[in-house]
Image (cartoon, rainbow, N blue to C red; front, side, top):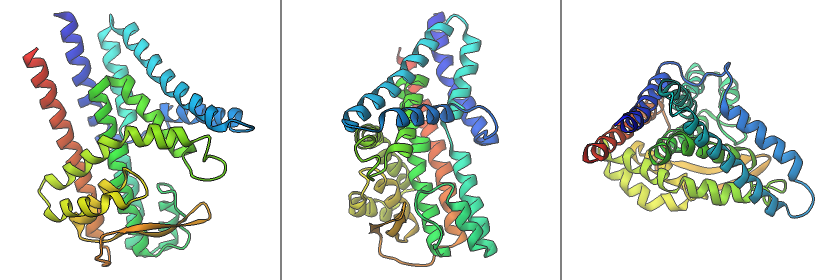
Length: 319
């Protein structure tokens, strides 16, 4: 009975507490952060192993080593703290909070939008460069809003829904292992000379594989609540046209809901990339579009949490 109680509480308390903390305060930039630790680990491995021959093989071993070390360390921590449930609840709630980033995503998007509304395009470009990988130095107001909306859709999937998905499957250890995968993709997942071999496994195998289900689940929830027929059509027509096997799903869902056009040519690290268009209605994007996208993110996050709670309650009720 005690084991059931601890397991039951140890799932619900971090989920509810972590979501509440994210809603109230967002990402704590000034506090020690496990994702920054992950970044330091990846950077060290990059310097040590991304050179010489056999870079693809070394990249595979590094990626597997980093992900498994995160999972095994946190799995062991769960076992060690099991006799001390209060400490376990607190640590897991904090780690859950660190792994979810919806408040910060929306906050950063609205900072960009604030400068666009004020008409200060240089400031908007600079602010946007903090959350996107493309070159922002020559973007127009319309292109800035397009990039903001694309980022809101994509990061809803890998910054919110995917962590929730892996938390449901394997608790904090699997959730944080996913965050290591996602961090590796953002740091060494580039298709350039330096990382095409070393980062191939982390980006093409681990990250693409890990996000396969969450990206499609995100898109489905976006167009189901409330139902959007155009959103469904956009997913069916455009999701697989995207260069990424996953990003096209939430992006096409949002483009369909808003009836606008995403994609097109953009510069990444000095290289022009011709991204396929998602949608045909090349209309001007508005402040209302950005606000609506933010509300969609909040709604999908709450719906996902509710679904998880209902599934969890059903499983443990039957148990």
